[in-house]
Length: 116
Image (cartoon, rainbow, N blue to C red):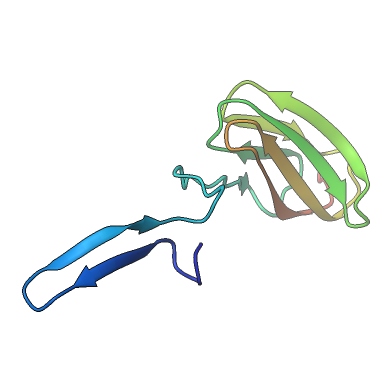
C-alpha cells in the first residue's frame, strides 16, 4: 500500500497528451491477494465441528478462552471434522495455519453441553 492506495500511478501531462510514467507498488506487496478464510459449522456445536478452509492442507488447533491449546491436528483436505464432545461447554477459538498463503486465521465458536 502506498500512501493508503493499493497502487500509485505517476503521469506527466502536457497540453496535448498524457503520458503514464509507471506504477509504484510498495516493496514486498504480493500480487496474489487471496485471503485465507475459515468456516466453522455448526456454531454453536455439541459434538462434531466441521472446519472448512480453502487450502488443501492446513494445520488446526482448538484453543480455550484463555488461549491454551486443547486440541490440534493437520489435514490434507480442505475440510475436517473434529470431535469436540469431550470439551466442556464454553467459548473456544479454532486456528488454521497454512503454508499455501503463509497465513493464520482464527474463528470463534461456542461449545454447548453435549446431550445424549
